[in-house]
Figure (cartoon, chains in turn brown, cyan):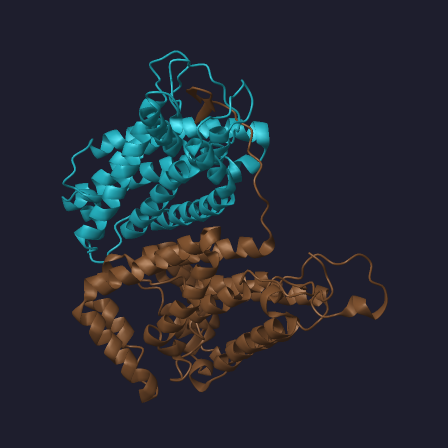
Length: 334
Length: 261
């Protein structure tokens, strides 16, 4: 690369080739690293939104398809929005894609971090309603396997938990830094308990529900992924009830895990990441990106990212007595 | 199909990147003693032109097979440099060194042109039209590789943006120095205002002044012209320019890869 030296009345350029020492870089803390992952996901979503499919009637029909089964107060605006997009297909989708691209770039660029995070919350809420029909929460279609409670609402949750502010007390985990440990734990418990509830709804505990949902995602996927999904679907077969009960138990353990001592909390978070990975690969087929027509990465990676935000931070030196048993690294320092 | 005007906008951005890289190469004055042509600028120049040609088929550049050869050479070169960086700095060089992203860029270009060559042979189309006009039918032999490349490129893009914003204070200092009536004398090996900016790209912070004919003083009868040229040089060497080019290239390349799936 070139360097410029401004010296009195001269400027000199010199390039270098070969081995170069790596420059000293500002260190990343855990929250900034998670923010960057969130930025990358938004950026990928923006790029996905530029796909050919999004400029066709198929995208519009996908949006309109989220309205049925929802209360009219929710469904009517969705239908109105779908009609609006139908009339200005290219322009509206180009704007959507660009907004998501800018959200990703904005979160990655430190001076615009707060603006971009705040905008991402608003945008996520809008997409959750108008694009995902509240994730099927109100129409009985929600399942952890298909992205309940709506992948995009997880972006908003992450933006809030990763907000660049610190409360006075040392946070036991990254997600607690902005909102406090009690609120962060409550949000975590609500999310995972709601997933457990959705797993046990009649539609999702039907004998062939799980296997049907998994095999229904393999259309258009690469052969190796289709094989994986077919294997998983045939393994579950008609044991949907048993599978949903096992999954629900795992989700409840994850939900309460953050209230337990740090070592157990870590095990629960690892379980959360494993469950998220399982769902993402087998049930969500990497968000359907490889089959084209995906608008986002779906909920799997976001659930895993969320779990990382609850990972107990480095323990404080040698607290003796009962304080060593505080929940999920309480009292720890960064 | 993705509207042509959107692809044209990205093509224009790529042409701008190519123009900036060409200006950096010219400003380096490789024909003079002490001037050295830099590999990353050459890489950006070639990639900018090639990607613009892919995005806007009306722009005729080299045949796809020729581009595959060009980027294969670049890939080998950056592979060699990454290996040397790795020997010198360890695994950290892969994350924060500037050669690793260029290696991924080069490999992605080889992949894209190879895929387009195969696809256009089958479909009788050219450029992105060969890939994005197929109505959702995947035509790539290994679409997973396209997604993998896109994910890595996006990862480098957000990392670049984060590092770029970390260096804003350095940029501010350089702009202040450029606006001043008298600039700080530089001695060989000593860090100077502009040199520090280049750390974002090259990982170095020192510079020497050994080209006395390159007058760029901000004072004297030709002060206005010299100041203007100095600002141009500072712009070309600023991290916002250099890393910005790489960011634009990474986003556009990721877009093209996703469109090809």
